[in-house]
Length: 238
Image (cartoon, rainbow, N blue to C red):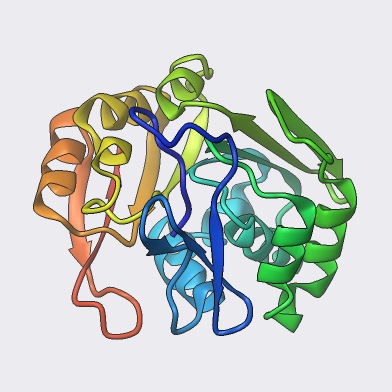
């Protein structure tokens, strides 16, 4: 999973990484891997795209805005962009991610090189990633795709965002490792910035996460998780 910490956080503005199995990034601060060790790309499709009923919803056209808690390696963005290019969508994709500890371009490149399916997206992301990411990173790609990474505390970033998110990827480190990322306050901000009929999806299924999302106003449902994980959560703002 990916790492943004809206509350207490390590003093450094960069992740302190270890590399497991060659190209699997692991956060020493949070004691967690950045994505599923089975296959993070396939997990993204199962949890975030299918959980938000994408790419079917893209067929309506117009601008579709995705919010993400935790940019991490950029895997979710690259896989979403790949599927966007394969869809018949006639519109634009705005992907906005909130990340407290941005990686360096070389770290992103190393982590994503594992998947040849997203080579094109990985290379474009790495080529445009700033040397010292800070503040807000804005990158306009071809094909009506724009990436914005807001660097800093998630509470601050989401509270300052306009209420126009069509879907959310909730992908912070595991709730047991980083509970602030799943707080009721932050889930309420996510709800408040979601359009009517918008949705969220997350690999997490902890009871307090489900309760916080429901308390925020989402209709929450459990679904089978990825790669043998018993449950995940998804929901709608009705």
